[in-house]
Image (cartoon, rainbow, N blue to C red; front, side):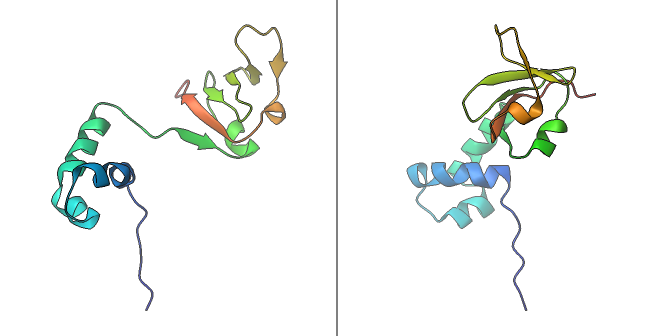
Length: 112
């Protein structure tokens, strides 16, 4: 029989680096009993922190909404406007294939 493991939640991932600095019990005990590190992480998440989204493929870039802002691997900050990528204060437009991956989504853009 194989053991099923679930992917760690955002709370669990963020608790790991904090745990060793502020807790004495095991990480599993903290996660199960909402120890100090978990309570701290829950407050950080409630305040709005979210792990930055990474885009690794051209297909993922093509699926991003209009007005999304990314930082590519170069690193260069770019915004998608009507199918073209623009760098602030640069009078040139770029195609998706011109972007160095991976890229980090800085602003999600239009939800529609």
